[in-house]
Length: 378
Image (tube, rainbow, N blue to C red; front, side):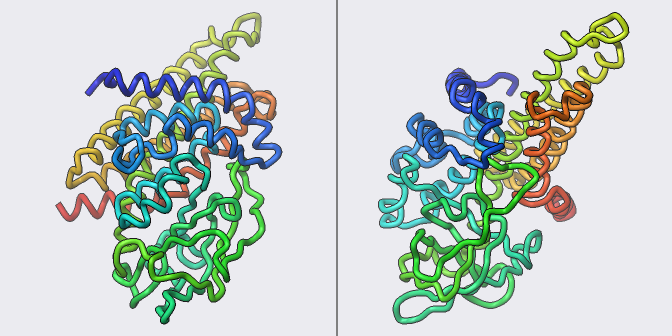
């Protein structure tokens, strides 16, 4: 596949126009004010962007992972933080559509698809990040349903979101003891930590989710007990493609800023773009972008096709594309020199925002573990 389908191009063009008109002009201010633009997210939802790969019969757009990657890249050109937040919401909506029962889909999907209600994904804990299967948040059955105790860490949207798809331990140690619960905001015993002060991703809140004898009815269980870890990992396959796409969009924006700058900036009596060193750097950046984009599209095709090696390719794409995106943004900053370090030019925000993409959705070191495990098992 060397060209996108016409329908995907039209979808990407819509997302690019939305990013240009509604996100890019405000991104710097949202970062400075630590403001989550819920109104703009709801405008995106009105265009179908809150349920991109939720099935059409469930009210979603029913699109492919490739379509979604193109949308998230386009939105991230305006702001990687906003695009990434929307990708997390999409992941939760898809998991409810995929693994929920009819009652859960009927209750949650209509407000999630309009973003009248916002969703967060809760897996990481203070003591279990990369070793996700070691999570200790526990849900104990009682006559009314479940009693939950534990803490989830680094949760995007915590305190703002209306629904928390949360991985908890209902059984013994290891992956087989993990289940998934849908926890609404306002649940007795649910509270939140302080909004974290972060290097980047300032346009979305990040807090701990605290469960202190939180009470949930039995109907909050997604699927069956013991299936939660499998659900979590399947959600992360797509999430890794999405965050890679967000890296691409941010890196492309950083490169475009640098390209415009070097054409205008003069040094030693010439435009900076006339120097071969500048040209070589731009050539390498452009090549890295295209290689990353092409591989991401291939990984999307693998996941769409349900290929047996899809998880490995998703990990490869996440590792390669987020590393490349971060590197390209840093190179773009260097081309601007001191001006790149100033907030006014927009690149320093992109550098800060993209840095965390190499950590979340599974660190890039864990991606290497997944890749190697797949290779050695073949």
